[in-house]
Image 1 (cartoon, helix red, strand yellow):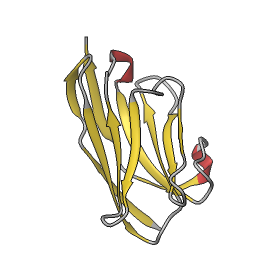
Image 2: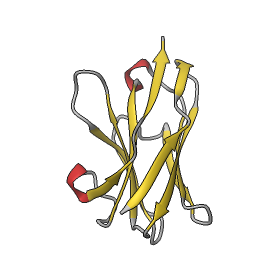
Image 3: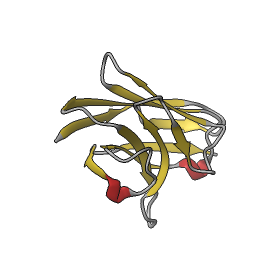
Image 4: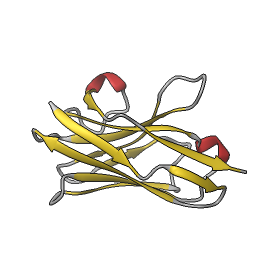
Amino acid sequence: QVQLVESGGGLVQAGGSLRLSCAASGRTFSTMGWFRQAPGTEREFVAARYSRGGSTRYADSVKGRFTISRDNNKSTGYLQMNSLKPEDTAVYYCAVGARFASTQEGDYDSWGQGTQVTVSS
C-alpha cells in the first residue's frame, strides 16, 4: 500500500494558477494519476504520468493548461494548473497504480484524501 497526502488546493480567481502536490510513501509505483470530483458529478480523470519514460496523458478539458510531473527524489507528484476556469472547481485526488498512465479509476489502488480547488469567476 502507498500512503498519499495531497496539498496545495485553495481559492483562486479565474485565469489564475495553483500547484497541487501529492507526497507518496510506502512501496514504489508506476503511475501517478490525478482525478477530480465536482459536487453532484462522478469522479473524472484529469492527468496521469507513467514513471518509466515519463509518458503523460491528459483529459481533453485540461490539455494545454495542466501539467503533471514528479520529483523522483522526493517521491512527490505535482499537478500544475494554469488558466484555471470556474468549471475546474472540484475536489482533486491523487492516486497511484501499476497500469501505464491509465485513465480508469479501477487501475489505481491507493488514493489520497483529496484537496479542494475553487475557482471564482
